Amino acid sequence: MSVAETPTGATIVDYFDHNGPEYVRERYGWYREIMRDKGPVFWSPHYGGYWVAIGYDELMEAAKDWETFSSLRVLEEPKPGEIAYKGLFVPPRDKHQPMLEDDPPEWEKWREVLAPLFSIPAVKGWRGRIQTLADACLDRSIETGRIDFAHELTNIVPAIFSMEFVGIPTETYAEVAENHHKASHLQADDPRRQVALDGLAGERRLVAETIEARKTDRRSGVISALLNARDRGHAFTDEDIAKLGGLVIGAGIDTTSAVLGTALIVLTQRPDLRQRLKDDPSLTAQAFEEFMRYSAPTQGLCRTVTRDTELGGQKLRRGDRIMLCFAAACRDERQFPSPEVIDLDRRPNLHAAFGAGVHRCIGSMFARLEFETLINTILRRMPDYQVDLDAVRSFENVGVVAGYTTIPATFTPGPRLGVDPGIEGWPLKV
Image (cartoon, rainbow, N blue to C red; front, side, top):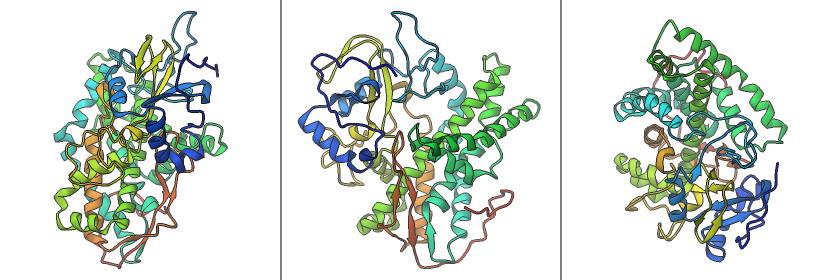
């Protein structure tokens, strides 16, 4: 990787490495310390050098200005004098992520096709299915008094839903969930990450087979919607459709399971909050926004600077890389008083956890639906659950998403509902 010359006059924080194990343990302290002592934008010398925006106002300014702060990932080597567009990740990944690493007008062709699938009526249409999945998962543990929420619920429901939403068979949901988690948080040089990436070959095969089948047998789902759009003249190749299908699956798994895990842990620590949600399930909607602000599962995504500019008192150069640290911005006390406190009555709560501008997360309403459904179902069927806080394990690295590998809990056993999720081979071992 080429090493960028440290910008003249830059505020430098040499210990900030968002991929390192220290970040998992220390990140919230780092945010406070850096914001207090250094400011809202600074330079990290890791991975060839990159800027980091941790201030809310500064991050939102950059996120809304896609022309200056580009999400593009261009795989070809740039010609002399051209910008090396390296996409959303530091260090950059070796593949282009459609839509995520596109800017207008290319971005608009994807959004136009997908927007109806993520509309309010479309989201509401999935409510019953997600409730069925939640109850079916809890049925497997409800009589035992023990559950690992990560392995048996919060990883599983988002995985099954995402696969069904794309339109592929769901029998391998547990393997798909596990591989996406590892691919997301393990460092690039970790051999386990390559094993996970290799393991996702089965998912890619399912996507490819489904594309072929849907060419003559259209159904609901992302794949059929993209094929329909191609029939209307959109220049989508099979590879484009396969990439986007895989992207939707991966994006729907990690972030939702992470915010659910945080909520379940906090509700063990804060019985007052748990009681409020049990007494009034309608509060779960605003609880979702506050837990998203508090935990911001997607820690940060990067941009490429397209022109010399200034942000947060720092002079950014054309071609520089900058990480928009959503998790830090959501803890900026200039925007959120007492940011380390969960406040279900926080108003307004204009958090940055879903990003902003054209690249704001298109799937936020589905995440909200899954959160509300699963939390309310747990509080109804396992109302006295207690997470074993000493046994909880977070991802050992963050990379992009901060989540959990295990969330063991105990509760008073209850009755099964006998819910059949309609998945071949259910229940599968997890």
